[in-house]
Length: 196
Ligand code: GRF
Image (cartoon, rainbow, N blue to C red; front, side, top):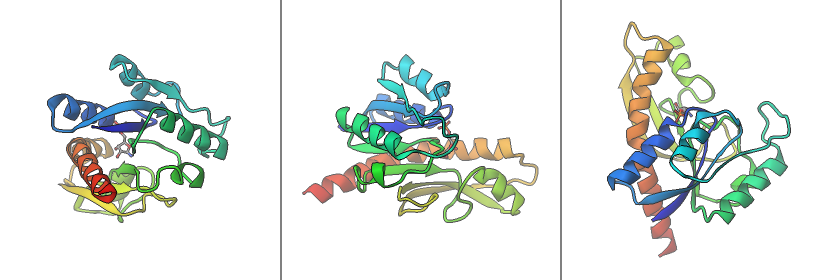
């Protein structure tokens, strides 16, 4: 039973999908700690409702930067909670060495495009603007780049002619909720193999 830490800045629908997979018995894991850089993010409320320890990350007033002290604090809190695998789920700040170095090969992210296409913000809008006929989602290991790092799982969806950013993102999210728990199981298997 792997202990997960979740970092998010938004609604937390991916965290919910992970919780649902755990409840359904398809993912052998528990969520030990949920952290958000936005105190009002719904992901924290979801965590509280599910009785999962949760907290706000103090980013010292920086709008998008993730200051080193905050990253060290997060690393400390995750370690103290016994977290073995860190899952970014809509977390909007870039991680760097202070946090990455504490969890080598143990931080994964979900991104709403078929990477390496459309990294960065509003990937579904980027796909529409580029006239792509297909997009999707990717789970990958996190390094210090923007949505770079080795890919664990991907799922494709069609881009339809009358899609708005909202309809395309909603179609992608259905696949996110399916592949994220599966990719966590895969990352867990790899960690177990590495420690054999
Ligand atoms: C997802 O589309 C994810 O791919 C992106 O941010 C969104 C988070 O959604 N990184 P939620 O908070 O899990 O609902």
